[in-house]
Image 1: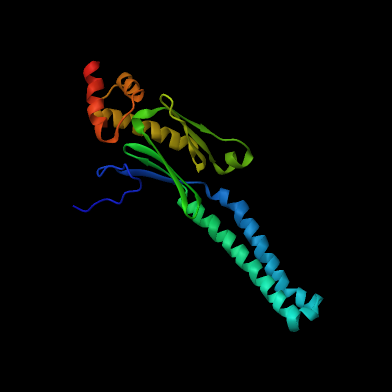
Image 2: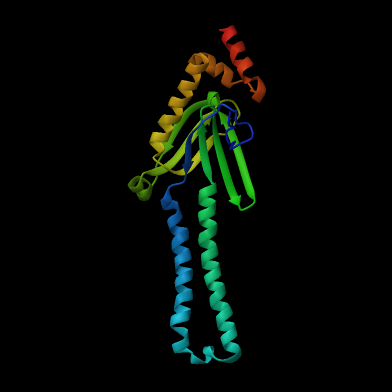
Length: 208
């Protein structure tokens, strides 16, 4: 049997990725517009400066001019590339057992946070401002049990739809394990170890 690719350390062999969510494409617009402006400045330097300042095309000044324009182009392309890579790597995963937030703050800096579906108490969707309403993106906040910090996915598309889907997946997870809502609330308040979570589910059921 072929082994599944693992996206995070505690992913089970039979755990499926249901949703892979990235931020809405509109969040890229400011960064790409900035990169375009930098590149436009470089093109203007190539097209206009030789006519405005002909001395730049001769001698040592030409070397400085060439290096400066080249650096402008490299900076503009580098900014665009970095933003596209970070956009691609920053993801939220919803699996058959977990919700996972993968935050990439640099090329070599990544933070992965996991939350079991059974630990979810509520999911809310928020949209603020004209652009979020117009392009249908916003924030999904997952309220967790106990002292666990809430999960917040910002600027994702269709936040209302994803909020409902996550709650439905939690209900399905409960049904698959044969746990009632009350039993799930009891279980959510207990710390769950990765390799013993099924035993703890059974113990909660036995107490009911």
